[in-house]
Image 1 (tube, rainbow, N blue to C red):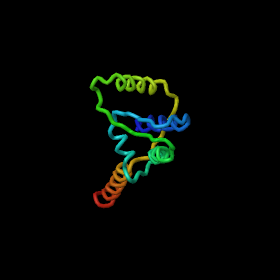
Image 2: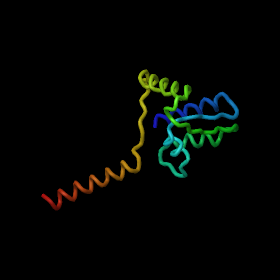
Image 3: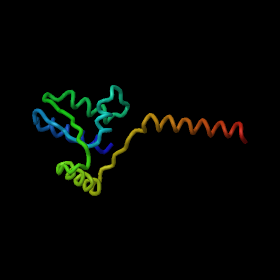
Image 4: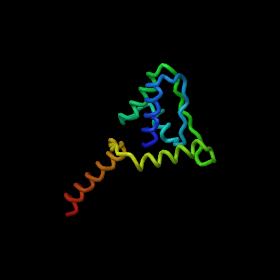
Length: 118
C-alpha cells in the first residue's frame, strides 16, 4: 500500500504543477493491478484513479522489473526506506474484503463452538 501512496503523491504533484504528459514508474506490480481493477472499496485507490482520470494531461503508469541494476529504481527504493524512517505521518487503512470475511468466519466458528461443543 506504500507504493499506492507514493503514486498518489506523484499524481498530486503532477496535477499541482501541471507537468503535461508524465510517466510514473514503479517496480510493484500489485500497485498497478489494484489501480487497474474495475471495482475497489478502498477510498485511497479510488481517489488516485479519479485524480488520474481528471488530469488534463496524460499520466502513464509503467511497471519495471525490480533489482536488475536500474539505478533510478534502486535509488528510489533507498529514498523510500529513508522516508519511512523519518515520517511522522500516521496512515490508517480500511480492512480488505478478505480480512472482513475471515473475521466473520472466525466469529461464526467461535459462536458455533460455544453453542455446540461446550
